[in-house]
Length: 237
Image 1 (spheres, helix red, strand yellow):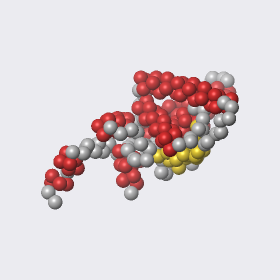
Image 2 (spheres, rainbow, N blue to C red):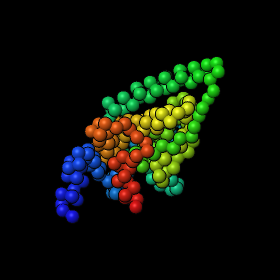
Image 3 (cartoon, rainbow, N blue to C red):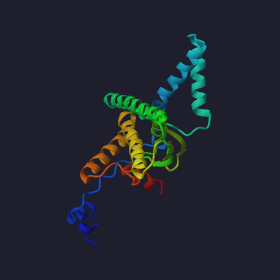
Image 4 (cartoon, one colour):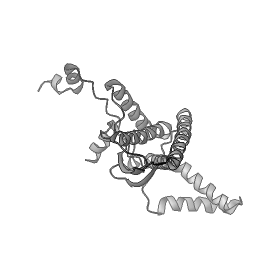
């Protein structure tokens, strides 16, 4: 086999097909970080736990702060929970767009659900839908599930953490097009969350996937894995 035949970009150009997007860097994992990097990533969580402890006591002194710090470290180090590392990144503009889109989605969905509740003769047709997420981040998965559940008409009923699957109950899914619309909305929410608070690698993977969709002219598809999901599956294998 020649070098030209073994090169995917050359093969795609020769056949007239759109080249595949570049594979994103390997996502940052807990074992990839040094001790100080892990502490820095967990610092906002520790500060939040200490602040919660102070609010519960409604009193600020040396003893309260000291016991809060000790308990925060004990909770994050001694209790068995999957390690969740914060990305250490926040994009204010993307965060604003995420908040505005959330308010818009909640408003529109509230009106739709209220109209269906009082519409005479309307028969509900609901479904349990499995959606393959684009990333495997526990933080992004949790925030996506919460954002989807906040919107009336959809609620997450189960999460497959190992495979990155969300199972949600959706209202008003009468056709296959309705199912695909719900999946696209879930993945769109996940993309906006990643662009707002995800790691640089995750955000770049989302941008690469968007550029690839524009180049190929296809919509966001929950049935076909995106670059980061493919890369992580290969890492798991």
